[in-house]
Image (tube, rainbow, N blue to C red; front, side):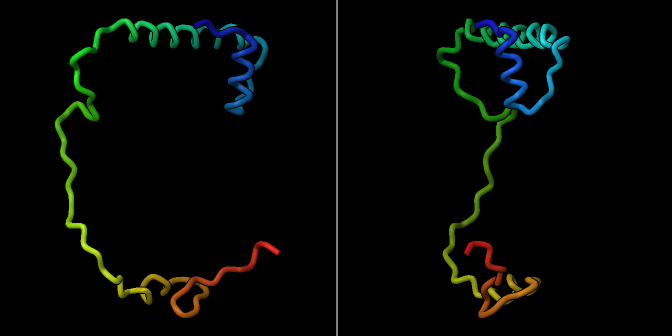
Amino acid sequence: MSIDAATVKRIGRLARIRVEENEVEKYMGELNAMLGFVEQLNEVDVTGVEAMTSVTPMTLRRREDVITDGGYAEKIVANAPLSEDNFFMVPKVVE
């Protein structure tokens, strides 16, 4: 895949980055180099290789999944500027 000048300008607009006319050629080269590297990765044979999430073996620490009733609603709304019956009160924003 090859990136042209129109695509560079479109990417810049989508990313909300100002791309000056004199920079388009430079960005075209950089983006084409990146895509070329990704295409090289597609040539690697990865059959039989297990997907990794980290370079070091890790296991997630898990806790017991215990259902509770909470029981501390007062603590949750304690710092709220305005609350009533343990509910946050906010100004009306939709008519």
